[in-house]
Length: 399
Image (tube, rainbow, N blue to C red; front, side):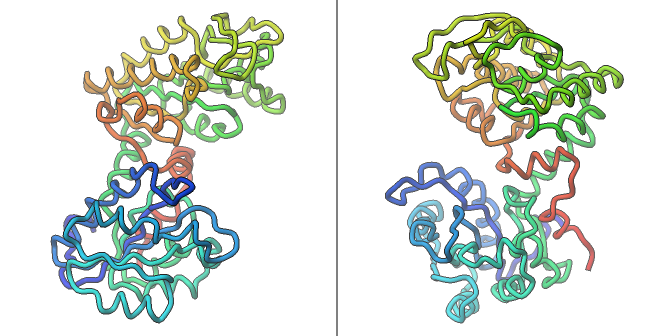
C-alpha cells in the first residue's frame, strides 16, 4: 500500500527515521538534512489524525547509553522544524516509561525515543528486542533509506510483528526506492553512470552491475589511476590498488565485450604532495612523473566528460572526481555537477547518491537542479550492486 493511501487516523505510527546527523563538540547539529527529509512523512501522519513515535540511531555508541550520542540533543531543533507540535522525549526505547509515553500519545503529538543503538540488540537484529519496539506503535513506517541495507531490529526484523496492511514506506523511502528503481530498471538511454571515489574495491560490484545497463561509464577520482596502471601506464605517486590491477583490466575487457564505453580522464590536475598548498600542474593521466600524484581530473577530461553527460537521458552519479574538499582540486567535481545540472535542465533524469557526491552538489549549489539527491550512501551503493536491501524487503514481504 502506498503511503498517501494509508489511513493514519487514530493510529500510533512507529516511524523509523534516519536522524544520524553530525553534531559538533557542544552537541549542536551541523547539518539537519536528514531531519528535514523526514518532515513530509511526519507532517502527513499528524495532519491525517495520527500520532508519531520516532525511533533512530545516532553515531556508533560502543558501551550502551552515552551522553554525546543521546537523541536529547535533537529535541529543540526538531521542535523548531515542527512548530506548534507537542514533542515529548523519553530516555529509553523499550522501557515501561517509553511504552506508557507512547500509549498516552494523542493524535497530533510526537514522541522521540532514545538512541536505538544504546542496546546492542538493535544492530544484532535481535528478535525479542524488535518485538518490544513493535509495542510502541500500531503501524510501522520505514522512512530510513540510509539504513535500509542493514538487517537491524528496527529496520527489518520488526516487520513481522505488524500485519502487512499495517506497515508501509514513508514518503522519503518511497521516493528513494522509486528513483533508484527508475535508474536501475527502466532507464531511458543513453544512460551515463559517473563513478568516482578513491578505491576500485569499493565500486567493483556497482560497475559490474552497471555493465548490463549503462551506455557509458565515466570513471574519475583516485580509482581512475588503478585503471590506467592496469594498462601499463605511468601514474607517478597517484593512488593505486596494486591488488586490483587484474580486476580493473577484466572490467575494461568486459565493458568492451558488452559494448559499454568506459571513459577514463585523459589528463589530471597533479600535485607534488597531498595538500592544499602543493605545487599544482596539469598533465596526461597516463604519464604522471614520479613524485607527483593525480588529485583531480584535468582540463581536457572535464571537457570530454561534459560532452558525454550532455547526451544523457539518464544519469547516475556516485563519487567525486577529485579531492574536492581542497580548493585546488575541486574544478573536476564542480564541472561534473554543472554538466549533470545542465543535462537535467534539458530533460535528463539524474540521481545523485553517495555521501561525497551529495556533499559536492550541496556545496556547489546544484542540489535543486538535479532530479533526485539520495540520502542513503551505503544503501544506495548496495541497491545498485543488485543486492536486496533488508529494509525494503521487510515492508514489501507478504504476511
